[in-house]
Length: 248
Ligand code: 8X3
Image (cartoon, rainbow, N blue to C red; front, side, top):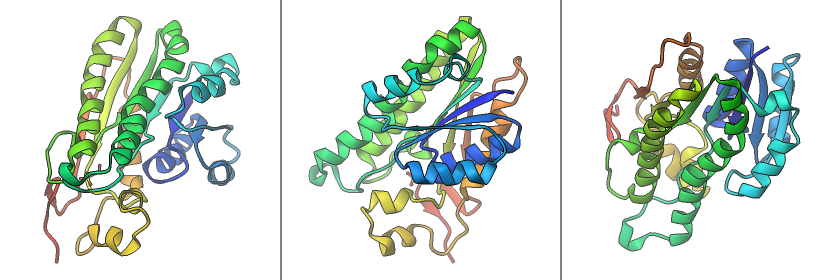
């Protein structure tokens, strides 16, 4: 049975991707900060084998320690989905909170590196595997007040490209999906629990659902070894660019 390791699996795109990969025949390692949610996920996909790891991707030592508890087979997954991360705040750079900046750079960039670093020995030793990084339209386009979030996702884009080159001789493929407006906890987190402000982001049009992205991720990571879909930008139907959305 093939194995998929998914970070940020307790909600949103990560959770939907875990469910979709379970449906596609993968056993799962699901990582996140909220064990209860991961247990619910495991119950939902039963009888598919699910191994739960509770850690914060920002904590390199915790990531290493958690991965070390896995049986060797699971330390070398067929698929790694680097999904954990998010946005904190939406303010001009001159009014931004450096604590928010740290959060985003630590999770979206360093967190991705921490998890990748912990799993690469196993994946490269196997000479096969697929790393799917979750970027964002925000990594491709600048939008006002996006500053550090946009920069962190641009870093994911460049890491994807450079990792793909570095790992080429190892047989580990690397690709990226760049979602646009997906209705998840993303905006609640960005606006620190301000539900009304978060809801406004998705008002007047049909946003993407996490399942829409999950379906595409499953397609990307299940292509045969001679096919790498390197990058996919996924926008909502009413969305022409990051902040260009037709609302009714
Ligand atoms: C989420 C998409 O446009 O809100 O990454 O930044 S956006």
